Amino acid sequence: MKKILSILLLICLVVCALTACGDGDASSKEPTSKPSTDTTKPETEPGEKIAYADIEKKDLNGREIYLTERWFGYGKSTIDFTGEILYMPEDDGSLSNVNQTKKDIIEQVQKDYNCKIDGEIYGEGSTDIVGELKEKITRSLTSGTNEYDFFFESFYYYTNLIAEGSLVNIKDIPTINLSSSCWDQNAVTELTVCDALYFILGDINTYDNDGTVTMLFNKELYKELGYKEDLYQLVKDHKWTFDKLVELSTTFETIDHNQDGTRNEFDNWFMGSETSNLYIHVIAAGEGICAKDKDDIPQLTMSTEQAIKSLTDAVEFYTGGQVLVANLDEYYEKYPLPGQCYEMTVTNAFLEGRELFYMSTLIHIPYFRTMENEFGILPVPMYSESQDDYCSATSVHTASVLMIPNTPKADNDLGLVIQALAELSEEKLTPEYYERQLKYRDFKDEESAEMLDIIFNNRHYDLGAVFGMSWGNADDLYEVLDTNIESRFQEKESLIAGYIESTIQDIQDSLTAVE
Image 1 (cartoon, rainbow, N blue to C red):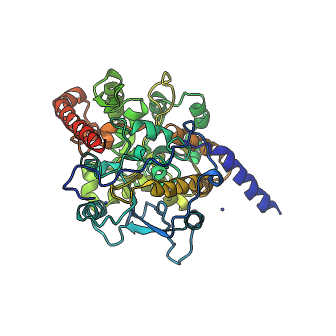
Image 2: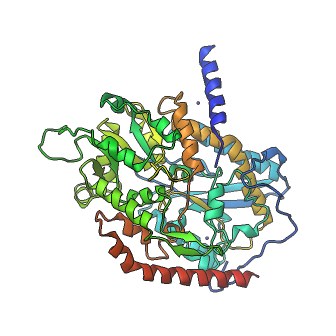
């Protein structure tokens, strides 16, 4: 998605040099607004980089643009969320480099377009952020107040709004240049349904990155345990596979750290993970719940031979005694507070140097600022060397995307502002974000920077998980620590296929109404 390494290296050189001398009326299925056609979509090759200075500027006569975004990880000490477009000051009122950059971007776009950009980061004091925010957005649509111009949230919770015609098909706003490199091109292609696109992500938001699943590894512990293979080189040589991960685990010697005679969260572990990551291993194998046909219609692919085999191998690995699984019932019962079972198991084990690998989203990295050992970042291993490349995935329950409510405000001028924010974010925010991810470790760790490029450039999106809430939560079927997979899938496939067929018909009806 982003060719960022050269930018990062330039930042490193500068730092070193300085050191030597940083939600219309839901009663109707028809859309309330149809974009005008007086603006021509720029002729751009997919993934082409465009300079902010070269994009169209327009006087919007003081137009006010209001957005909302979910406060991811509110109340959880292991998650450091700084906002999407909006910025969050520190407790003392100061701004981190990332947040200062967001502020600068807003001010520049406001100046260049004579508009006012404002909004809310929703969550403080809430006990149900996801439910309450969705209720606010839905109420805004049904009441006709049309409070929000656009918003950031996880697509998983909003797919039902598509069939209702409550979200804009972003392809109908020509001033949003979906070919620009500031948008994740895999997402632009893979998140379409019936050739319509309702979710976009890229440089404009950072929690799509923060919500991406990776493998962290303790560099010092890796050396102490006598491992010799260069993990970064394995990745670059296309040899970082699931079999290699399992092979490394066979020589890992367990230690009863607290000497209580029980294998538990206080001991050492080859890897820390959770059952939802079993599905991530399937994605890493190039498989998933759905694939799209030539008409851009999702078709079930859950039970392919490769999908079943990769999931079976992952379950056997997770139950083989070398993986600390955070969300087991015993840990939920022992640590009942929100997120506590993760913090007290896999997160603390990695922080305290008792866990060699930690499979997690990137948002947890700042939690390890006090970690004594140096650690690195790797993509989730591919299943087989025969694959074309690594396949990374975001957490569909947490990673953010941009959505636009279908209201009269969803016009070409709004598209101009969104595109401007995205282009300027590519130039200014993304390099700053990379520095934030790396500065808690060795800032000279150029290999981890290269790994981030590999991870972000190879993210893939499975509509079966994206539409999970609307399609019977098929991804839940992957989270069972039981290898009786085929019968489990077969029991639900006809039901899931029925949900898909119903959703596709609703979307097609909605698109026909627009025409």
